[in-house]
Image: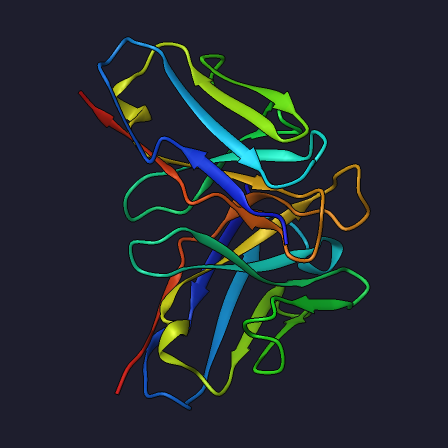
Length: 122
Length: 108
């Protein structure tokens, strides 16, 4: 059974940093593409970043240059380093497992973690 | 960036009745469209992919249709567990992959 468990959220002041973790079981993280998707309080879903099996990464413009996605294959865990945090980054952050699609770049997610809340406030 | 627009924002339906949700893309996404269900305090769950294929374990009362820019999610006979927020998402044009703003299906 596929499971994704996010940790690392919390309260941080503007300009601060956090590292989110997503521990996976039931599949191999490095064998799939993985994304972070966030949801601001009471709002919809926003794709934020993707890490492919070959190590290639992409980011939404809103976080490019501030956030970094990575993985540790030995721990089968996905990470998300959040730097220079802004009030507008406040959201529940979900990690999601990608599945193969007709396009090489994917974009379809069949398993999601329960999310971890990041609150950026002074 | 492709903008996904869902309507209506809220749909009030009685249990046992049909619910029809719409999703429109700002440009063609072919059939590269998914629907997700999200209940309060829970993660999204994949319902439909490739516009009309049901994901594993999804009941047959959920069906998707459409292509290009116009898509529909139909729930044929609403059960109590179906009251939730539904999001469409395109994965044809990237980056970024984009979601609609959601349709809340509530009990009438």
